[in-house]
Image (cartoon, rainbow over all chains, first blue to last red):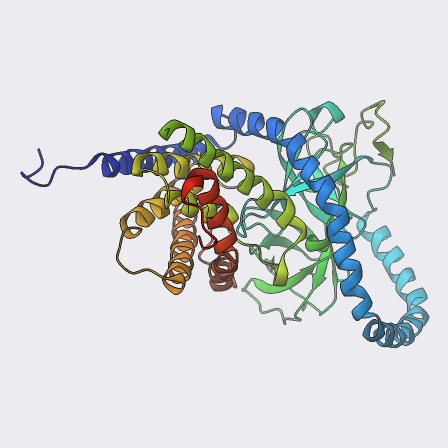
Length: 299
Length: 167
């Protein structure tokens, strides 16, 4: 019973009720961990909104391309100068590549690593992003009818993009590796040390190498170790060199290989699952599913 | 007429969230997008009755939860809190364009901070992210820029008889 003259007005009562419902929903969703009625709700909302979002995306894409084109013209002169310098740098790098290729081949042979060749992939277009700055997700226009299931790796031509964490019949949600909830087992290609790369919510990733014995060198390539993602996919490049200290975890930052702000088309690796992988090499033990959909490519 | 206005307001918020997830996927000046769904909820709350405004705010936030990557209910709670504050301050005597713009900035910022706190409590780790200050601030600044067109549309749709060239 409230004191006289201080009756709770209807709006305040509704506000408190809605807030309670919101907190209950969030608690339920977090506790259920993706296996509940909330997943069905999300799936239904995705299915309903996907055609509209794809339509808006279809209309907006050329306009954005046009605006990008205009802004690019203004920067062409600067870009030309940068490219000339880049060509000189690349010519120098090319001379060093032969030696590096031999080294990589040796390392791959020693570590029994191989890039994810021969895996079936489904090409998908990104039609929507997250609903706020805090969301590190993208939505793609392929779903369970194309062979996509939760947990599959998503890549682009540069490297690892993320993993599928919600699937409907015709669409799927991809959680980017920049999300703090995503952790990727990696191998530093030049030292063979293993560690974990975790998202920080921005464009930089965090690398933790436990029991590091060798320093992390700037620019070193990180590839997936085959634990949860197909082995040999480039994840990123060490941004900041760090010395290893005995008894301490080596922690440094990583530039992701994929350019998340420019993502347009991605590939979902449908022919590999950690459950089906050879525990030693991470290579697939089973053949990729034989989809007849023309969107399924064999790399 | 309240039901009709509520449905119109819900439609506006729905469109805003769809634009948020599609148009602002491509168009992000300096890597940030405005919080258009939240801005539209604030805009509609200025012209609806209190209960209807809260319902629209909660529904808009819930829709944003459904189409985003966060646990359900976080944006719904955030929108509800922001709309409730909007209702409390909308009839204050302070008026004028600057007061409205300052209000939009403040409300959006409060919304972003509320979401960051709730998200952190529910395991999203938002507060500890590098650059979180800009994540909270820049969408609020963008909302200030978009405030007048959005408020004008909200007023024209919900209270067409009172429409003027200033929202």
